Length: 443
Ligand SMILES: Nc1ncnc2c1ncn2[C@@H]1O[C@H](COP(=O)(O)OP(=O)(O)OP(=O)(O)O)[C@@H](O)[C@H]1O
Ligand SMILES: [Mg+2]
Image 1: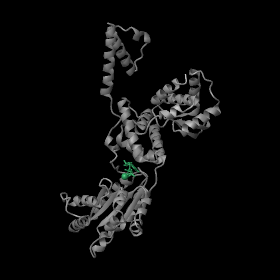
Image 2: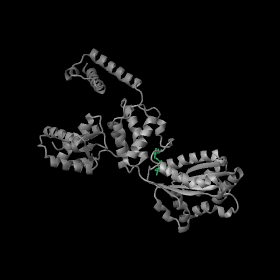
Image 3: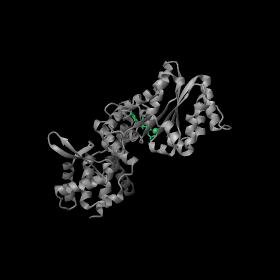
Image 4: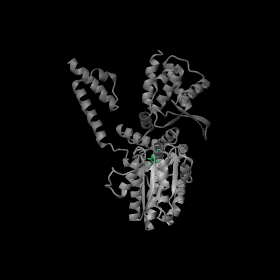
């Protein structure tokens, strides 16, 4: 009987806890078999029902796909207009001019998205004017920076079964121009991750692409280039004349600030999530985390998507800050145990308090005074005398310098200035668990 009852009791406790059913220890200690059976069945059914009935927080996840290009790109309007300006003449007199433009900017600043967005729009405008304009986007890194493979992909756009063997890069370029002449078409070739082409082929490839017209005297210009790269200084690897043919028109994309990321995220939230599934506070929190990751929109969107996945797996109907912290720590390394162990006892107690405050809260932010209150309770728990307010402020600064918490002094109309605290990099429950384990050593 005991053999049967022990696992049954464990199961009983598990289901009670997993469905947050309140039970007294007395009941757990001696439940009748029938009671165990009924409760377990009740819990299985109610959890199952919750899972079955649960509606996903997502309305259309594909809008968060990294390759999805949205119909509008908030905060890239100026750059889009600049690009349009560069190609204005080409739209009017396509045969007389081929354009060369560079789009540069840090990781996740929207270079690829901007180029594709612009390319689609330009093709539409061209078509309206009766122009056969084509936009071909090639990621040079995918083609190992080989001019031959890049040109093969471009030729295949017009001749899908064009053989891969038996031609040189020059011959492929000649074939591409021949296709364009035959179809009276014009191409904008976007060379994404252009640096890999420079690395592999150097200035020679640039000459082939840009001096093409010298061998096509009196023929229309047909091939324009958009070169996309992160770091403009990579162009220094090219010789002076190759560089000068490219560098005339540069569109530089600055990193996004927090408020810009909020707009980008809000746009995606409305396309990808059910109404009210992502609170304002959560969007702001994601934007702040992404801004600290160098203003990277890709990171922001991936974090939003992952946080939504965590919300679904928790059967929650909203994407709350804890889901975001879980998502963040699944992307970046979470609590660094060695760093935690190196903290002093009172720093750990303050961090423990922060973890508990956020575990109990649905907000992404709290104020330092709240954390300090929890710290006093934690000190009592561990038989320690709480340190002075000035000392607590120093601990908080140290925890912030290590990246465990984030501090920001803000102005609140009613109370003047106050210190806002957030827990950026790790789920509060995980942090609490790690600190409790580490504190055991202090006891
Ligand atoms: N202004 C914006 N509005 C909406 N979405 C944006 C914007 N900027 C970037 N994104 C989105 O952020 C993600 C990253 O953008 P993108 O791939 O264009 O960055 P990138 O600059 O090309 O980065 P990398 O240097 O890593 O190639 C994409 O999903 C893109 O759609
Ligand atoms: Mg890109």
